[in-house]
Length: 293
Image (tube, rainbow, N blue to C red; front, side):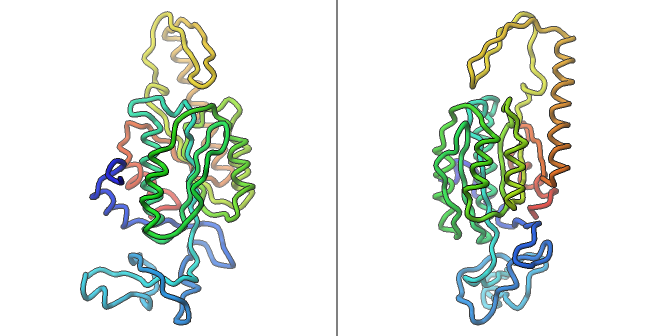
């Protein structure tokens, strides 16, 4: 099942990564996570790979002697990070080559795999003009394949209502954490109130905007009839160089507005074209940010 989204070699690379939380939970300082509530009185739960800065007291040296790799014992009372993967499945995500929705599912699957491999709680939900049926946050490596099956079977349909769906999710969620929003952000109603709602409800927010090259630099010329894939609204235009230049200007202004908004709200924002291999997006570009190392 997993191989339909990514191969085994890529999965091994993902296991070397982990998520970080920026917000302070229960009095912890920035960047500090997982170690404060471990102790001999706690019940052993599982293992996870050692990461630089972890406490050597919880290394299982028996495992190290057999495998020559460092693993830490994890206990049931350990503080964990909750990842909320919010995936745009509106009709506009069908566009592109490869389709944005297929690219988005791979990114979501990879990020979910990282979280579950490190014993974080991971949940996922699709959204379009309404919220879809959620996969509630759960913990443990045994949740990897259910998550992949959930993502693979998501349909791509409906319009987009970013503000309403993100607001609803922010207020309905029982536990905050890191909200990873994957979307093309194509919504005439905007995105600002939805992202604000997540931040207001104490979510860290990572926004991944996916675009296709044809949306940035359309190869159109002459008389055309354009149709909105979500609303079916049509418009006839005569495309010339002046109009293409104006379009490029508007696209630049649109991207700049998103970047400015996210900077002011302390939201991490990454825009990615689907021509970038999704492996590079995860292993290189996201690792340059605040939440993945």
